[in-house]
Image 1 (tube, one colour):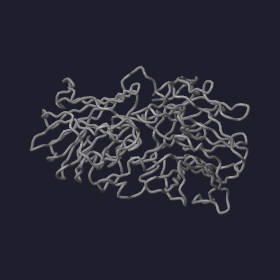
Image 2: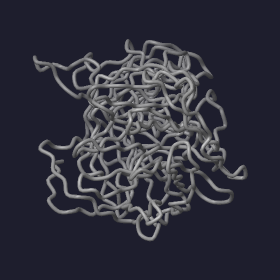
Image 3: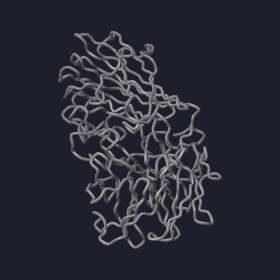
Image 4: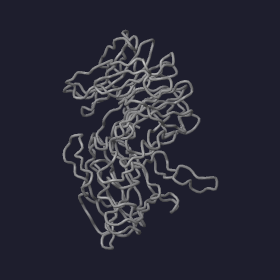
Length: 535
């Protein structure tokens, strides 16, 4: 879409109703940039651009892979990087260079990504030390610092090369959260405004939901005073709005941006006006409450803003009009590191092809599962699956991809093509994983397929935390035929096993022998109009 507003526009929170966890937003000139967590998905570390703080587009994946390990490559049953990988990026621009600092909990290493252009290419290197949920900061004298920690917050000065701590430099604890807190301070970002230093951080005070605190000091070696600045759930099931920071507009207006847990869809960005009180502390929204609607400044963009979700596989064609191999649209990401010999955009024109390259007990271990974020309140995904070259024991289909996954798939059994709905049961409503990565999926419903090529459909409904997915099918050669449901509705539950919102997943895995092939084509992504707001 084109951004050409000359007057402020009003939008509904969450302004981006999809899973962009741990957002960090900065402004450079008239343009805003955001980095977000991507966990175990590749390519990772999404970098997005906006002209109005509401409409965002991908401009880069700053990270190809975290580390080439068996866990990141899904090479061993029971070994994976789910819920780990690339966490909580800190995005900064300083004297012509772009920086992203993040930590990976599977490698227990902090990484610094740098670029001369936010569109890339990006370079990666390791830092000495491990900085959990870190916030990178450059002071007016060009000295660099990092704020980090969980419950106990520290500030450490970095050396000029940004390779590790500065010998003899500042290294101190600035805050210790209440030991009785359900979850202590984390997700911190450091800023400077009017000579004061601000640390935005979130936590779960004992017996309460998630809140945002701000710590202020007159100097980095001075005392930091803490205050709660957001304690609000947008009237949404007690899910607190917290973890983020602040950004100003070219005209000097200030906004706070925070994520909010929204159940199965994941953690979504919210936006709210902000001002500074007489004592310097931020005052958020309307009397400290996050507004349901937010006015954003006028903005213009000469080029259309690309969508953050979509139906196309291919991002670009080469000079001869053919497909650039492996060039997917940026809204697609793979589950874990790809095994490139087992997927293709070129072997069958117009299709995304998967080859079976390993035996897997279930969807968790499938190589090259291709994913895309769902969007609230409702997302509909459709795809045609050609299963004519599956082998016995193969499954190829369309998933609600999360820890407690469910899917509709074509499978081959004793030479016959079957259509099945399967799932991993939800054992409880907690956010904690059951650590069962290997058990086979449970069958909900199964019928003989009408043909080897079927059109599959999934409706992901997040309306008011309904968090259910339902599956449908029809003959691929009869586009006017009625959609027929298969199986029951399945819950989409946000848990810390994946630690991400539910995604659309296109997959193939084999339980008996390798060598099968599945083709996916005519993918369609839509978000039907509903009463619940958000982009």
